[in-house]
Figure (cartoon, helix red, strand yellow):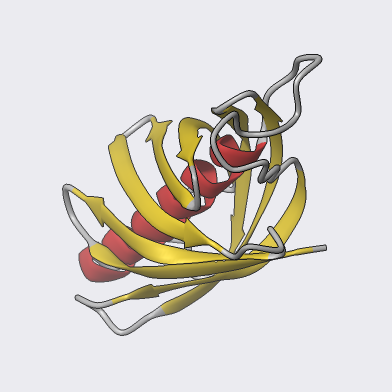
Length: 139
């Protein structure tokens, strides 16, 4: 199925956001908390991406592993997405997460806030062809 360019950009952005979020929660190590906050985002997350450029919403999920302040994982996307899965990596500093997802067509940067209970994250994403907001809830 061929997608229109704006839909492709949104899908790509949603996918990248999902990857970034997944990357923020994935990783492996003996330490499972952020050294500065005690927050651990390892686990499975589900949520949405909303493109501020195209007004499209996609459903995403992330499987993350956190070791110290490093996070790695896999992000998946369903809905108006170009890719179904992508690797991501990032860092947790206190209640802030920053991550990047790389895919065949480029990359997206994600920045967000983690709730004190580490059960919700939300923030913004920026890709070369899209930008918007994201939110994830721990499953």
